Image 1 (cartoon, rainbow, N blue to C red):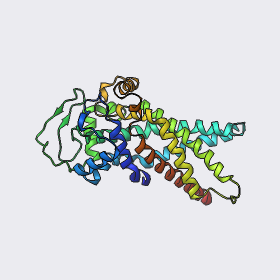
Image 2 (cartoon, one colour; image 1 turned 120 degrees about the horizontal axis):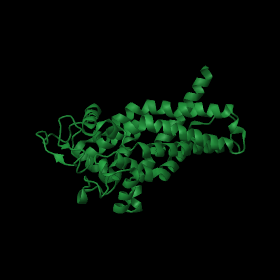
Image 3 (cartoon, helix red, strand yellow; image 1 turned 90 degrees about the horizontal axis):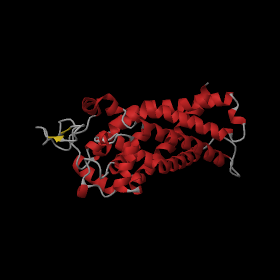
Length: 313
């Protein structure tokens, strides 16, 4: 929860940039964001500081469950692999961590990240330059999911500073899109991205932590806090760059006009046609910043909790 609250503005900026696809019905043309700082400045002017946290409540709500699912699944699978002596074979430790990380990521992606991200992405898209502003208390224009038509209502004049409310947004999303398209659109790219990232992060963290522990002159003992921060941040940054194309597709498959894409592959083709290869790396800078901070905190807190539990039991 702590790392999600601290880093969500990076997620907000990244998602706004990822959703600027020319094929989108909500593409803003000349009013499109020019970069991360432009997103921050314009959001702050129209919605205040809390505007950068639009959709963040869904991340915070799901955060404890995400951590429990990912790390518990990984640890249980690693214990199983150890009992089968899979980690004792040449290269077995690395392969074991990779396999356990991929499966833990798949569980996290399917059960936690898909619904939480679907809500967050739609709330962020709602606040884009041409967004319908329908997920705020006080109302706004209604977005018709099937036709892509922005329907005017009597509440269109509501102040843009009316705060978005995650429960209000959840009800609106369910009514407009239904349960599947509302909360599980983008399931497959989410599972693919989270599995891929989890595999890289667990293996990368384990390898780097081991190198830091075995460096010459280091005293014996558990990994230090700064070592855990460095290992987690580095593993997170590498995974963010390598998985960015999948993340861009995921975001657009969860957007307000996702139904224009028949599949994730069709979405990727549309992004390539409209923006070329750079289109698949929109928002990569803010994502690297967020993931480095988030993963360094996450692994460090996990190491501390594991040591505390081992001491107790």
